[in-house]
Length: 212
Image (tube, rainbow, N blue to C red; front, side, top):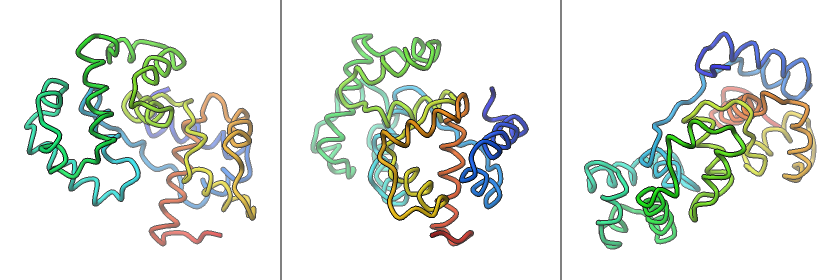
């Protein structure tokens, strides 16, 4: 499935809406919004890490400083930059360690983005998370929004859990384990379900639709 093809994405969402009442409510509220695409390779992965746990505005400011400092965000440039230079951009020490660990993996060949792109979901995810600094969530986001994989599901994502809680009118969120089990019914479009749930909760936060 080509997730950037709006007609294919719409068909997948319509199928999900029929299978799950909560997803049907989300689809009715926000429709099928375009799939987000992101830059790949080291720079794309580094950007995902830089944006974690920050507001979009704050992260964009920091990332802009990183790009200005390095000119080209690449493994050799990150490894050559001092910690003080990277800290001055606004990156935290843990994120700097992650970016350097990933850069070293790329330099040694332990992480090969071409190999990841050619691999099946499970093998691609395994190669990514084997690198210190790349967790399951980061791997899933890379595979979904860089490589367009439609069945990855970041089941511990707080936004997804909260969106599903709202749509089911539940008092408490599902546990990540229970959420992953629920998502089994959404194969092979679990990533499409995640995209739909993110679209819904973002619309709630922006005041486009009401939430519970």
